[in-house]
Length: 338
Ligand code: P6P
Image 1: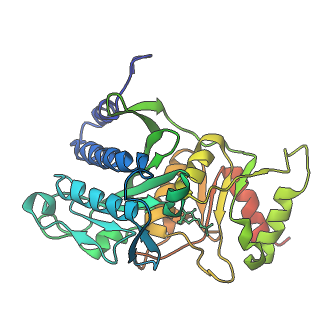
Image 2: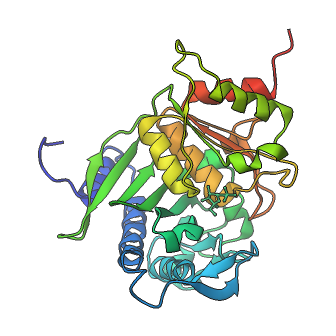
Image 3: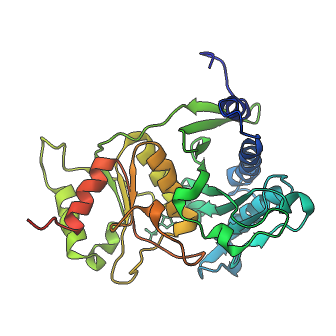
């Protein structure tokens, strides 16, 4: 790759595709479509405070969460872009009860399906905190030429072809992982292109930041509370106490963790025995990205990517980030008996 040259995401994916002679370019084309959706959503996010797109949409989604208008706009944008893509057989969205098959011939013959959380962290929209779109791309398991099936969307994360997110923050970035590497692209608004800014991202093996909603501490298990005490006690050799950072927007907390290292946790607790975050829309894609960058994603009992999904909106606990920090946290949950 030539040094100093601005490399657009399209150029990058084409160069990456050339490394695999058998690649057809369909995955690159799908990533380009998702990037286009991100640019369209970004335009509305940037002016959310100025137009009547802010505030409650009045509807509630399958999670029972009140839908912000931007949620609905982002969801419809992704569905429309992917419906017109020649590389997507269907979608499943955190905002939709069920999956959606695209019936046209082109789509029915496409080999990929896409799952997404169209606007994660939407409770932060009206306080101008970072929010994001999270997406997962699977090769379908159903027969080409026929409509996609639920089984296409209930695949474990270890079968992901690619996963990524678009973060609408101080800058707009698209980060995506394949099994080969994780790369970040920053939107250059003057040319409307995502340009390579973070090549071959690697999660530091150790970090100094722990990220979780400490307001839930009283509902945590004894092991989780012991780990929190560990994070807060002073130990200069180990660089503790850690710093606590929690934005309340998974994409923003995970993007910081990916770049700086650290651990993000949304554990099971007394009121949420499976935790809060969704396996297929948040935990699997983020674990795929973090593990491709050398980090770790665990439910506390095993690898997130190995969980066999049983329903589209199921939740799992998540411990994710620097691999040594995740290992340390798990040692408090399941102390190794001597
Ligand atoms: P809590 C946002 O609603 C979200 O789904 C994630 O983006 C975020 O990490 C989490 O929920 C925040 O949850 O319970 O701490 O507000």
